[in-house]
Image (cartoon, rainbow, N blue to C red):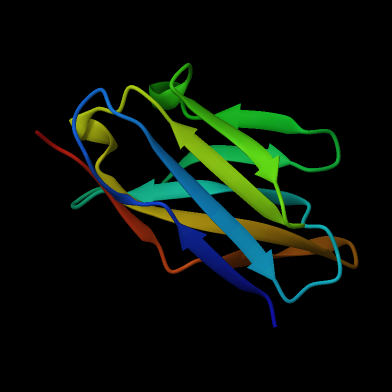
Length: 120
C-alpha cells in the first residue's frame, strides 16, 4: 500500500521561505510523477509544481514561477518543494501527489495535506 507522508508546513511572514518534503513509501517502483497541489479556502485545488522522474521535467503554476523549486531528494520517491518570497496568496493546504505507473496507465496517490500560512 502506497502512503505519502508530507512535512514542512507552518506559519511564515511574507517574504519568508519554507521547504516542504514528501515521501511515497510502500512501492518498489519509482513514481512516474510527483508534485504538489494546493487548495485555499473557497478556491479550487490547483497544481503548484510537478516533476516527471524519467527526464526531470519540471512544471510550475505561473503564480509561483521563479519563487518555488521542486526537486528530487532522498530516500527514493521523495520530492521537496522549496518556497521562497512567500506571499499571503500562497496560504493554502498543500497536498503532495504521486503517480505510480501500472500497466499502460497510472494510479494517483495523495498525501493528507500540510498547512502553509503566510501572514505578518
